Length: 146
Image 1: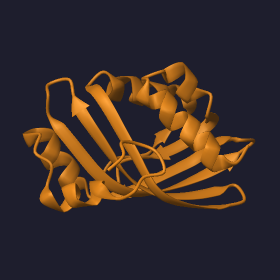
Image 2 (image 1 turned 180 degrees about the horizontal axis):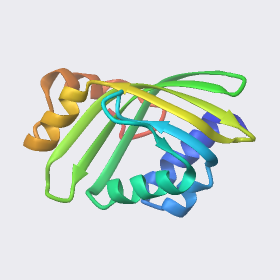
Image 3 (image 1 turned 120 degrees about the vertical axis):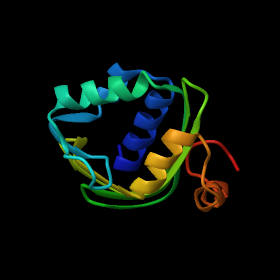
Image 4 (image 1 turned 60 degrees about the vertical axis):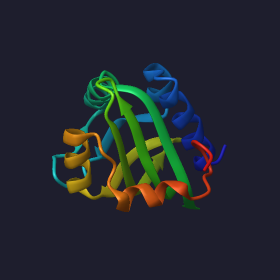
């Protein structure tokens, strides 16, 4: 199976909020920098599960869009947008670029780069910035169709 297909399967599991299935795609020694650099990376599968459980507890609906990717051996670069409807009704949409490094068919290193200001502001206000909104209407590989 290609790494993009593994990622698409993981995205589908996350959309169902099936954390057990999501964790089957994660290496025991995962290092996940999902904060765009404004927080320390999550290290280890147990810590990642804890982070995802915390995240899932605040999300009513997930619309993880993947727009484009490049796969080269065990490396997968991706461009997309994470869009969430939070349990308090707020809507958050964050365009990102990311890099996955696979080992033994599972994600070993995961780095995402995005605008932390958009993240923080939208979590407070629930209003998606116009600059982010226009990026949601691109054709998708997976996620809500534009």
